Amino acid sequence: MSRALLALIAAAALAGCATPQAPKPWEKGNLARPEMTMAGDALDQRFNQHIYQSKENGTGSSGVGGGGCGCN
Amino acid sequence: MKTRHIALACLALAALHAGPAAALKVGDRAPEIAAQRDTSTPLRLSAYKGQVVLLDFWASWCGPCKQSFPWMNTLHGKYAAQGLRIVAVNVDARREDGERFLAQRPPQFLVAWDAEGATPAAYEVKAMPSSVLIGADGRVLHIHAGFRDEDAAALEARIVAALAERR
Image (cartoon, rainbow over all chains, first blue to last red):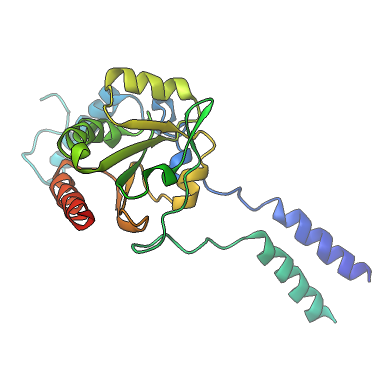
Protein backbone atom coordinates (compact mmCIF):
# COMPACT_ATOMS: atom_id res chain seq x y z
CA MET A 1 0.00 0.00 0.00
CA SER A 2 2.82 2.37 0.92
CA ARG A 3 4.34 1.58 -2.45
CA ALA A 4 1.19 2.67 -4.25
CA LEU A 5 1.24 5.86 -2.23
CA LEU A 6 4.88 6.38 -3.11
CA ALA A 7 4.15 5.87 -6.79
CA LEU A 8 1.30 8.34 -6.59
CA ILE A 9 3.46 10.92 -4.82
CA ALA A 10 6.20 10.39 -7.40
CA ALA A 11 3.73 10.84 -10.24
CA ALA A 12 2.34 14.00 -8.66
CA ALA A 13 5.84 15.36 -8.01
CA LEU A 14 7.03 14.55 -11.52
CA ALA A 15 4.06 16.39 -12.94
CA GLY A 16 5.72 19.50 -11.55
CA CYS A 17 8.68 18.84 -13.85
CA ALA A 18 6.43 18.88 -16.89
CA THR A 19 6.93 22.10 -18.78
CA PRO A 20 3.91 24.33 -18.77
CA GLN A 21 2.05 24.47 -22.07
CA ALA A 22 4.21 26.06 -24.73
CA PRO A 23 2.94 29.51 -25.64
CA LYS A 24 0.42 29.47 -28.44
CA PRO A 25 1.22 31.43 -31.60
CA TRP A 26 -1.00 34.31 -30.46
CA GLU A 27 0.64 34.45 -27.02
CA LYS A 28 4.14 35.28 -28.20
CA GLY A 29 3.97 39.03 -27.65
CA ASN A 30 6.58 38.98 -24.90
CA LEU A 31 8.83 36.57 -26.78
CA ALA A 32 8.77 38.93 -29.76
CA ARG A 33 10.20 41.83 -27.77
CA PRO A 34 13.64 43.00 -28.91
CA GLU A 35 15.19 42.29 -25.51
CA MET A 36 14.29 38.62 -25.90
CA THR A 37 16.71 38.00 -28.77
CA MET A 38 19.56 35.62 -27.97
CA ALA A 39 22.08 37.79 -29.84
CA GLY A 40 22.61 41.51 -29.49
CA ASP A 41 21.01 44.29 -31.47
CA ALA A 42 21.02 44.44 -35.26
CA LEU A 43 24.34 46.32 -35.46
CA ASP A 44 26.03 43.92 -33.05
CA GLN A 45 24.74 40.91 -34.97
CA ARG A 46 25.99 42.37 -38.22
CA PHE A 47 29.41 43.01 -36.69
CA ASN A 48 29.61 39.43 -35.41
CA GLN A 49 28.55 38.12 -38.79
CA HIS A 50 31.27 40.17 -40.45
CA ILE A 51 33.98 38.75 -38.17
CA TYR A 52 32.62 35.23 -38.61
CA GLN A 53 32.59 35.51 -42.39
CA SER A 54 36.11 36.91 -42.50
CA LYS A 55 37.39 33.99 -40.45
CA GLU A 56 35.53 31.49 -42.62
CA ASN A 57 36.87 33.14 -45.75
CA GLY A 58 40.34 32.95 -44.27
CA THR A 59 40.01 29.16 -44.04
CA GLY A 60 38.78 28.85 -47.63
CA SER A 61 35.03 28.77 -47.33
CA SER A 62 32.53 30.44 -49.63
CA GLY A 63 32.91 33.98 -50.90
CA VAL A 64 35.96 36.06 -51.62
CA GLY A 65 38.69 35.35 -49.13
CA GLY A 66 40.30 37.88 -46.94
CA GLY A 67 43.11 37.53 -44.48
CA GLY A 68 40.72 36.52 -41.73
CA CYS A 69 41.23 39.75 -39.85
CA GLY A 70 37.77 41.21 -40.54
CA CYS A 71 39.37 44.48 -41.54
CA ASN A 72 37.93 44.78 -45.04
CA MET B 1 0.61 -5.75 -8.27
CA LYS B 2 3.66 -3.68 -9.13
CA THR B 3 2.80 -3.50 -12.83
CA ARG B 4 -0.63 -2.25 -11.88
CA HIS B 5 0.91 0.56 -9.91
CA ILE B 6 3.16 1.49 -12.79
CA ALA B 7 0.21 1.38 -15.19
CA LEU B 8 -1.76 3.60 -12.85
CA ALA B 9 1.09 6.07 -12.59
CA CYS B 10 1.45 6.11 -16.38
CA LEU B 11 -2.28 6.75 -16.74
CA ALA B 12 -2.09 9.60 -14.26
CA LEU B 13 0.79 11.13 -16.18
CA ALA B 14 -0.96 10.66 -19.51
CA ALA B 15 -4.01 12.42 -18.15
CA LEU B 16 -1.84 15.47 -17.46
CA HIS B 17 -1.02 15.81 -21.14
CA ALA B 18 -4.27 16.61 -22.84
CA GLY B 19 -4.08 15.94 -26.57
CA PRO B 20 -4.67 18.74 -29.05
CA ALA B 21 -8.11 19.06 -30.56
CA ALA B 22 -8.65 18.27 -34.23
CA ALA B 23 -7.58 21.24 -36.35
CA LEU B 24 -10.06 23.45 -38.13
CA LYS B 25 -10.45 22.39 -41.76
CA VAL B 26 -11.84 23.86 -44.95
CA GLY B 27 -15.55 23.03 -45.08
CA ASP B 28 -16.02 23.18 -41.31
CA ARG B 29 -18.56 25.54 -39.81
CA ALA B 30 -16.66 28.64 -38.73
CA PRO B 31 -16.60 28.85 -34.91
CA GLU B 32 -18.26 31.88 -33.34
CA ILE B 33 -15.84 34.62 -32.40
CA ALA B 34 -15.56 36.12 -28.93
CA ALA B 35 -14.16 39.56 -29.66
CA GLN B 36 -15.10 43.07 -28.63
CA ARG B 37 -15.44 46.14 -30.80
CA ASP B 38 -15.09 48.18 -27.62
CA THR B 39 -15.75 47.49 -23.97
CA SER B 40 -19.52 47.48 -24.37
CA THR B 41 -20.00 46.09 -27.89
CA PRO B 42 -19.29 42.44 -28.53
CA LEU B 43 -18.61 41.41 -32.10
CA ARG B 44 -20.16 38.20 -33.37
CA LEU B 45 -19.78 36.46 -36.69
CA SER B 46 -23.52 35.83 -36.84
CA ALA B 47 -23.95 39.54 -37.61
CA TYR B 48 -22.36 38.92 -41.03
CA LYS B 49 -24.50 36.00 -42.11
CA GLY B 50 -24.81 35.91 -45.90
CA GLN B 51 -21.59 37.87 -46.38
CA VAL B 52 -18.09 36.73 -47.17
CA VAL B 53 -15.87 37.37 -44.16
CA LEU B 54 -12.10 37.54 -44.11
CA LEU B 55 -11.25 36.91 -40.47
CA ASP B 56 -7.71 38.06 -39.78
CA PHE B 57 -5.71 37.52 -36.59
CA TRP B 58 -3.05 40.14 -35.90
CA ALA B 59 -0.88 41.59 -33.15
CA SER B 60 1.28 44.68 -32.78
CA TRP B 61 4.39 42.53 -32.30
CA CYS B 62 3.83 40.58 -35.50
CA GLY B 63 6.08 41.79 -38.32
CA PRO B 64 4.16 40.54 -41.37
CA CYS B 65 0.97 42.11 -39.96
CA LYS B 66 2.51 45.46 -40.86
CA GLN B 67 2.49 44.35 -44.50
CA SER B 68 -0.95 42.80 -44.43
CA PHE B 69 -2.72 45.90 -43.14
CA PRO B 70 -2.22 48.09 -46.25
CA TRP B 71 -3.18 45.07 -48.37
CA MET B 72 -6.38 44.54 -46.41
CA ASN B 73 -7.19 48.23 -46.78
CA THR B 74 -6.88 47.81 -50.54
CA LEU B 75 -9.08 44.72 -50.43
CA HIS B 76 -11.67 46.56 -48.40
CA GLY B 77 -11.73 49.38 -50.93
CA LYS B 78 -12.10 47.00 -53.84
CA TYR B 79 -14.58 44.43 -52.53
CA ALA B 80 -16.55 45.87 -49.62
CA ALA B 81 -19.31 46.92 -52.03
CA GLN B 82 -19.53 43.33 -53.28
CA GLY B 83 -20.12 41.98 -49.79
CA LEU B 84 -16.67 41.34 -48.37
CA ARG B 85 -16.32 42.05 -44.66
CA ILE B 86 -12.83 42.14 -43.21
CA VAL B 87 -12.70 41.52 -39.48
CA ALA B 88 -9.24 41.89 -37.96
CA VAL B 89 -9.07 40.38 -34.49
CA ASN B 90 -6.27 41.74 -32.32
CA VAL B 91 -4.67 39.30 -29.88
CA ASP B 92 -2.33 41.68 -28.04
CA ALA B 93 -2.25 41.16 -24.27
CA ARG B 94 -2.06 44.95 -23.89
CA ARG B 95 -4.57 46.79 -25.98
CA GLU B 96 -2.45 49.98 -25.99
CA ASP B 97 0.15 48.15 -28.10
CA GLY B 98 -2.51 47.35 -30.67
CA GLU B 99 -3.81 50.89 -30.64
CA ARG B 100 -0.35 52.26 -31.28
CA PHE B 101 -0.07 49.92 -34.26
CA LEU B 102 -3.41 51.15 -35.60
CA ALA B 103 -2.43 54.78 -35.19
CA GLN B 104 0.44 54.19 -37.62
CA ARG B 105 -1.66 52.13 -40.06
CA PRO B 106 -5.25 53.31 -39.85
CA PRO B 107 -7.52 50.47 -40.98
CA GLN B 108 -10.60 51.04 -43.11
CA PHE B 109 -11.95 47.64 -42.14
CA LEU B 110 -13.33 46.41 -38.84
CA VAL B 111 -11.00 45.79 -35.92
CA ALA B 112 -12.03 43.76 -32.89
CA TRP B 113 -10.17 42.91 -29.70
CA ASP B 114 -9.64 39.59 -27.98
CA ALA B 115 -6.90 39.87 -25.35
CA GLU B 116 -7.96 36.58 -23.74
CA GLY B 117 -7.25 34.71 -26.98
CA ALA B 118 -10.51 32.74 -27.00
CA THR B 119 -11.06 33.37 -30.71
CA PRO B 120 -7.60 32.31 -31.96
CA ALA B 121 -7.92 29.26 -29.69
CA ALA B 122 -11.27 28.36 -31.28
CA TYR B 123 -9.72 28.72 -34.74
CA GLU B 124 -6.52 26.96 -33.66
CA VAL B 125 -4.36 29.64 -35.20
CA LYS B 126 -1.01 28.16 -36.23
CA ALA B 127 0.91 31.31 -37.09
CA MET B 128 0.69 35.06 -36.86
CA PRO B 129 -0.87 36.56 -38.83
CA SER B 130 -3.49 34.06 -39.93
CA SER B 131 -6.55 34.64 -42.01
CA VAL B 132 -9.64 32.53 -42.45
CA LEU B 133 -11.99 33.11 -45.35
CA ILE B 134 -15.57 32.35 -44.39
CA GLY B 135 -18.23 31.92 -47.05
CA ALA B 136 -21.75 33.32 -47.04
CA ASP B 137 -22.98 29.97 -45.68
CA GLY B 138 -20.75 30.34 -42.61
CA ARG B 139 -18.34 27.62 -43.67
CA VAL B 140 -14.56 27.89 -43.83
CA LEU B 141 -13.43 28.36 -47.45
CA HIS B 142 -9.74 28.95 -46.99
CA ILE B 143 -7.16 29.09 -44.20
CA HIS B 144 -3.96 31.00 -44.67
CA ALA B 145 -1.07 31.17 -42.21
CA GLY B 146 1.42 34.01 -42.35
CA PHE B 147 1.54 36.83 -44.86
CA ARG B 148 3.98 37.45 -47.66
CA ASP B 149 3.51 39.85 -50.53
CA GLU B 150 3.71 36.98 -53.00
CA ASP B 151 0.75 35.25 -51.30
CA ALA B 152 -1.47 38.28 -51.79
CA ALA B 153 -2.52 37.55 -55.38
CA ALA B 154 -3.61 33.97 -54.65
CA LEU B 155 -5.53 35.08 -51.58
CA GLU B 156 -7.27 37.82 -53.50
CA ALA B 157 -8.23 35.35 -56.23
CA ARG B 158 -9.76 33.10 -53.57
CA ILE B 159 -11.75 36.02 -52.18
CA VAL B 160 -12.98 37.01 -55.64
CA ALA B 161 -14.11 33.41 -56.21
CA ALA B 162 -15.94 33.39 -52.87
CA LEU B 163 -17.71 36.64 -53.73
CA ALA B 164 -18.70 35.21 -57.12
CA GLU B 165 -20.12 32.08 -55.44
CA ARG B 166 -22.23 34.26 -53.21
CA ARG B 167 -23.98 35.88 -56.13
